[in-house]
Image 1 (cartoon, rainbow, N blue to C red):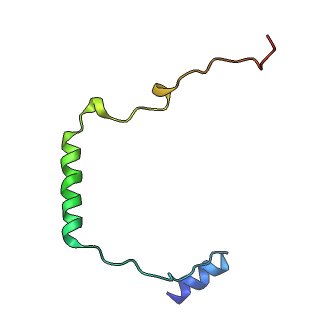
Image 2 (spheres, helix red, strand yellow):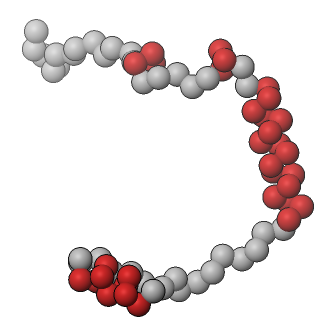
Image 3 (cartoon, one colour):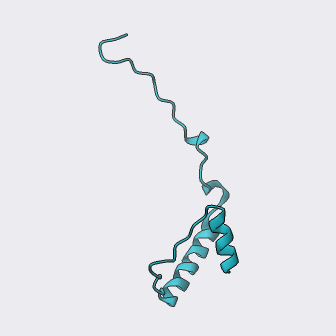
Amino acid sequence: MAGVNSMLHHLGFSHTRPTYTLAKEDEQKQQALAQEIEMIKKLITDDMLPLSAESIFVPIKHCEPHGQK
């Protein structure tokens, strides 16, 4: 591992060690969330898929500054 660190340092990379660790979440809440996500996935149909940016583009009328035409 030291060889990899020295090689990365030589190539201009750097790293820091984490200053904290994430707390463990409640296992039951995680399972409930996973079940809810799976249920939502089953309810989604093809016509509910997200729209592309092109399909929701709304042209804006060009407005002249007040007093100009």
